[in-house]
Amino acid sequence: MTEACVSAFYRRQHRRCQLHDVLFMSPQDGQEETGTVYYSLTSGACPPGYIHNRLLNFCYQLHLDKFLYAEGLADCTTRGEHLVTIDSPDTQSHFVKQVTASTDSTKSSYYIHGSDAATEGQWVYNDGRPVTYFAWDSGSPMNATASRDYIVALKFSAFRWQDRGPEHSRYYACEKYV
Image (cartoon, rainbow, N blue to C red; front, top):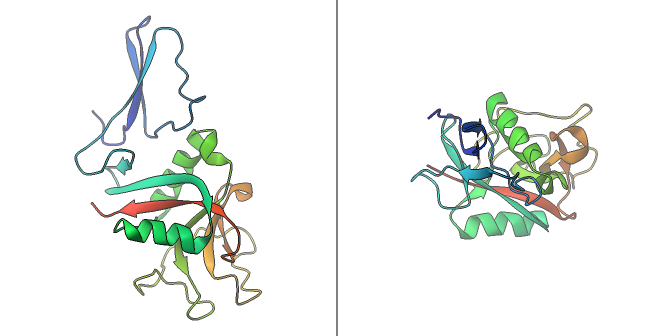
């Protein structure tokens, strides 16, 4: 078993398994071919429904209902979690790979962890730690107005980041510490 593998297709006809480093979340993505079975692999480190990246050692869950920033943040917080922290190129790459693996998860942009609401241009996490890795889209952050305080992984920019306001409903991802 490889550490990156989180799901597999078993094709009975060929007696072969095809391993994946993403979970397929949309029913149309997992429609079974005749003689094919889809399995998602779980570990004790994450609750059911969460994606465990064993290489990067974090658990997260994509939420495919659109909410305002404050609502998504509150939902994560009520479960003792926070918006997903993307703090390295590897984490960004994995997040984009997971989001683009399923049809339903590519339909919207995502709120992720990071804000400059306290001081314009100083990006921090909710606990006050500075954001040290950025995957900004070209021309971002705009910092054009004080209301662009939240990081959004933007669908139309291959999930590169832009600074956006809290007034639009978007998908979001919650992270659970392992």
